[in-house]
Image 1 (cartoon, helix red, strand yellow):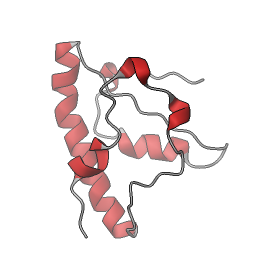
Image 2 (cartoon, rainbow, N blue to C red):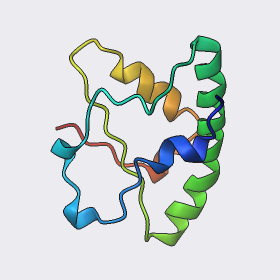
Image 3 (spheres, helix red, strand yellow):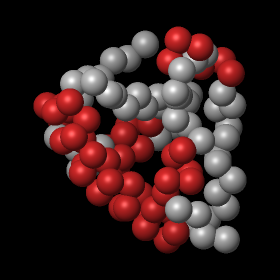
Amino acid sequence: MKKKLADLVGRYRVDSPRSFRLKDWDPGDTAGLDIGKKGAEGLLARGIQRLADLQGRLYADHEWSVLLLFQALDAAGKDSAIKHVFSGVNPQGCHVAAF
């Protein structure tokens, strides 16, 4: 079954930020994806393009934001994941914080 990008990311949308608690989310959640490397590469490429397209609108409005959390042990690949996910994004429209 081929999933649409909107179906995958929609489940992570936070509509009530005041009631959002990180502890309520499963860090092992894969959104039901069971794809190989080739499928993941195509999905990543489409996601990068969509994020790049939307960044201009989100940044220009100064009203909405996208929060991405990368949680893993040291040497688990967070840096590589961030490098790939944000490869199409303008760094001037980003804020990075380590905690």
